Length: 507
Image (cartoon, rainbow, N blue to C red):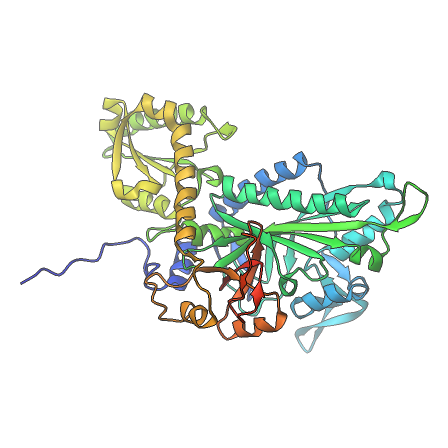
């Protein structure tokens, strides 16, 4: 009688293959990234998640300052009248806005109720184009005041009816850059420069391969002339918009009144841009790099790149093992990786060694080192590499590990990017030519064992054809920059078409 094959045991249940949505929630919980708060749709970002966000923030902030931008801070509350000046912008955010209408609470019959109605309602910041534009209208008088390049790190509120931790919450953290320019050429160059900054950050730091392109008119940022984006593929084949950069033209400057005296003495309106990324990138990390044993964090943004676990069999081991761990930590921290010292932590919690190790596996630490009396005696380190978990432990001479640790961290970074890129390519199809084939691809039983992903195909640009996508829950993610330049037929209508687009379901 044939033996029944056992299913491999995993730290996270269900697995990705069994229930992707629940797998995601379990990863977020077990990796200690975030949890729900007492306010529906809002989250608490826990130390491990916030540590990753801080490193993202630090890297991006350096890139912004290297490209000439300065940080500012603008009010959380924006007068309703500011939004009323920009009709297209308001329409895009109206259903998501949180509105403050009163300024105090009063006790009535033992119950606190809102009181003191405001003369003008205040909008809790959903984005800051209007309030920053009002400030720029005061700051900018002449072409000599241009360009004006500012960024702010802030929280925003967009009332989300179907929240999901890290991906869609009523309140989230982000940065928003806002710039004003003398000419179209300057503003468009800025828009494209920041688009490229986001690509470099996503691929070099997050190990997240992205497709660069432009949004179709129906997917543009409200009030924008052009929206450029980077689109990433998650492990269920869905797209996630990982960053956007917008050329706003003179739409906002005309509605708000941002004028300057040009080089000929004439009054002109500035050309503006805006661009931003948010904490949904934390969700992207989970869905792009997580496995059935937990989170995997690229070394460049890992709060702790190496975690050392002292293995203490008895009290007599303690002094020797801990002294070894401390000196090892100092040697590793002195090594330079990505322009910084290596981030090393010794975990001294009074819990079992196995529990500690799996806690760090689930949190995604690139390296976990277990150090016991035998390792001290042999002057070795017992190494578990998170991206090679299937290979088990390695016992490496201490000196060898120390001198190669920076190269090994970069090897993990590169390996994670290459794995994600290979996955993206494997789940992108470009041989679908008809709408019937298209519908089948996005059906439950599409003939592809791994399920749907990205379809790269021709599209005529006819906005009416987008109605065919609604029943499938599919959208056009972007018009990629790397077009083939050949005429073909629109996959939705069969009409002649030149441009290729990326179709996908998305978060």
